[in-house]
Length: 427
Image (tube, rainbow, N blue to C red; front, side, top):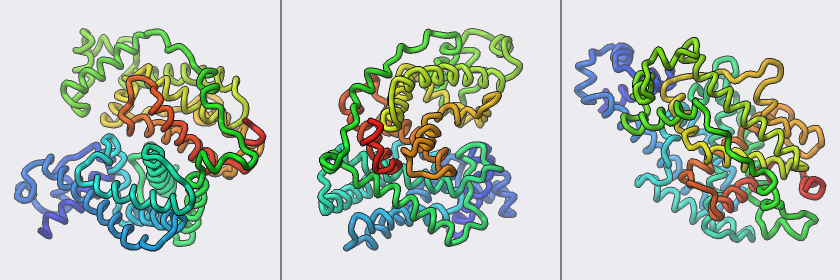
């Protein structure tokens, strides 16, 4: 059993350094000073080792929740949220490469539907429903689930900001526990996340009225930002081929050769208009960037204030993704093929242009975050949008149930980030 555990330790350590995309058993055996034959005595093949790695993650994930449930007894909502955030942070700090593993392997599935995880989420749900009611906040089942979803996403995202080294990280899968994070630094960060989450979670439709604040006109915003889908282009055929091949042989085996074959052409023909594979996909990504950036500039200019524009951003992103369902598959394919496409604009960074309404809102005094927190806050909005879509099962079209969840998620995000005068002045 001790040797089996040391092999698991080595697998997380060795494969974690390659973002879990280059997973050969040879370096693990070499690291442990054993032969591959000796390794096979404990794991018959790589798939069995991967299954054991997943079980280790899930067992420790369960353990941190069970500790949380014991320690949270007698706490109020404020204390429970702070304790939960601290537990999430400690979980990833004490388990190197778990955060990278989560992004690369587990985030593509809906963890809440796993048999071994369901009891945890049911317990969590019951606990927080009681705590919300004690604060005078009464939520229905769907809104409660969205609030907990918001808390989970924010907790993992803000831990990621501590793990992010701008000199080394080019992709979320490269997140590493910081080598020299002192106690005061992470306690300060924890306090900031706690304040943000509590401001969002304490918001409800009932208690947001009667205090000089107006409800956000969601239906009006949705009507203003509706746009026709882009015309069919040649690269849509390539996107669809990636989706089809991935469905047939799995996303890891969806090679360029198989995609070209699906398109009825040779690999060289596929590359005929591009210098290489990187150039081909960089071109495809830039086309998507240009289209969505054009739509965002045009439609967000019809809205006033950060409250409207932030929801307009979410709605436009959802509409575009649903009208191009192959996009999600394409981005997953990039991730699993370890393709890293740099996103830059000639003068101003794409991120700054994409989230320009954030910079405008900060200048106008509509946001409570600092300049340093601005881009992470903008990326969080993007993450909440996509996770709302993926964790809901990506509905074929927008329906009232999904829109209600999206609006709830937006309110939670907005109240956490906004200044008290946001609704009075800008909506």
